[in-house]
Amino acid sequence: MKKIKLTCAHAIVKFLTSQKILIDGKKEPLFAGAFGIFGHGNVACLGQALEENKDKLPTYRGHHEQNMALTGIAYARAKRRKQVFVATSSVGPGSTNMVTAAAVAMSNRLPILFLPGDTYANRMPDPVLQQVEHFNNPGITQNDAFKPVTKYFDRITRPEQILQTFPQAVQVLLDPADCGPVCISLCQDIQGEIFDYPEDFFKEKIHNIRRPRPDDFQIKEAAEKIKKSKNPIIISGGGVFYSDAMEELSTFAVKHNIPVTQTVMGYSSMKRDHSHFLGPIGGLGGKAANNFAKKTDLAIAIGTKLGDFTTGSWSNFENPNFSLVSINVARFDASKHMAQSIIGDAKVSLNELSQALGDWKASEEWHKKSRDELKSWNEYVDKESGPTNQNLPSYAHAVGAIYRNSDPSDIAVTAAGGLVGEVVQIWRPRELNTHETEWGFSCMSYEISGALGIKMANPDKEVITFVGDGSYLLYNSDIYSSVITNNKLIVIVCDNGGHAVINRLQLFKGGKEFNCLFESSNVSNLVKVNFAKHAESMGAKSEEVSSISELEEAFKRAKKSKVTYVISIKTHSYQWLEGSAYWESPTLEIPKTKENEKALKLHKEGKAKQRQGV
Image 1: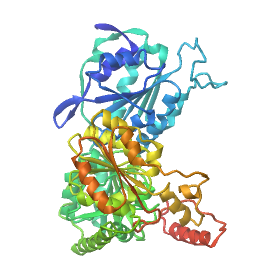
Image 2: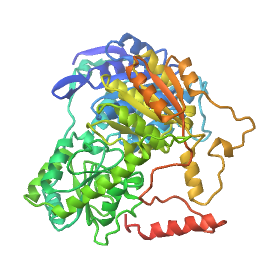
Image 3: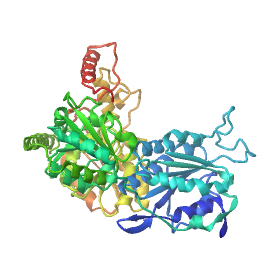
Image 4: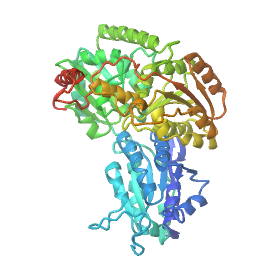
């Protein structure tokens, strides 16, 4: 066997660039690029290897390790997990800054490869700069913090170890059932050591994401259960995107006459004018979908982990005869909540389940009721998000203004806070794949960093991100990244004076306003932030507007801009779209106020409706 002498760092980069994937029959790089902030733990060796291969593996400079990783995660989501980014940092705070991003990827089942620097394998210089020491376990470093939030973790203490670990890492990144973040911690001395690697290790490898077909018995059992139902619904999740099963979802819904609700992560897998579209479901969902959830006797969940916001903390299904069929490529997700599981790829499973159902379909009366419910809810949303002259417009007014003036192909991005629920209600998809959010970990700062990744994955589409003042103040430096890399974004900053949606929850639970809005916080000199001028200082074009009509005109100018455009508007702190599902959150069992008593009463009413045994 022929061998080639390389440093460990050069061997890693050579291996990564040899990995390819088929996308629509075309061979593409599996690793689309790398984000890096260099320090003493990765600059000298891995950094040089990346520089020497920058034409094959483009490397982008980050401003904060967490946010550069969020950009890579969003890119992978927008590419439907078919391409992956690398994120590398130095040892120490650069490394631990990426742990939050790892949790985002873990909770959302998204791939990213973390390559943080680590301490010295030989331990001769210990303790090195930025090393966290455990007195009773010298083998632990700060990078062990990645273990709970990654699907695969390894520490390279010998250069030859990459021969075993990197192929395993690639398989995890591409595994449809076990997909998630990978962390390979690189001891900094090992990066520069040499080894005679077999040349075959670097041969071009072409990957294709497999489609596991479901078990015949599970299909048969699920079909029998569905045939017994009178009022079924479908809950379409993000897995429909990753399986590229949008067409199969549509065909299945029409053939079997089943209304389709969508999770926040699965939103825009069906267009708003589809005959069986019913809108978002759950704690952020609309009354149309939630009313049907309360009545349904069977839900067919497709590619969703059925989180508490989707299920209304499992109180949303009030029919005593309710049952669940869950289609998921991941055994863990498919087997939750007393479901009749179908463990397999969504596209394949829908086709086989449809064959097993034959000509069976739900009643036309049930379908007609879904149309009436949706019409009524759409009228409410249109009214609440329509033009207004009120002094402080609501989130809904601001989102509605952008939606009315957007193109069908424009992509809306959200992540944390109250904007997620308002956008998912109003941004009813006119084209597929036009709504992107991060709701698995609901990470503040994903709004701008994630939007950058989504734009990089969709360079020909307009990407519009909605961000509250709280998230903007947390992280905003990727506005600068978008400018210097020519990845134009439109950023809508809705300034409602702090963390207003949590203030809303605080009040709903009977508490007094405290530490959420700026006005109820411990501040002695409350200074108004001019978000537009701040964004302008980073090279973006920007405007501060004071009305919905001004917002609409500013958005038209933003659409024509060639560079990132930031529009800031003051919005109402207390006005929201109507909620229609219970969501369990902690409640005082010993009320202190009448408001606490009311909150406890509502809490108990919701708990009483929860499905048991989940």
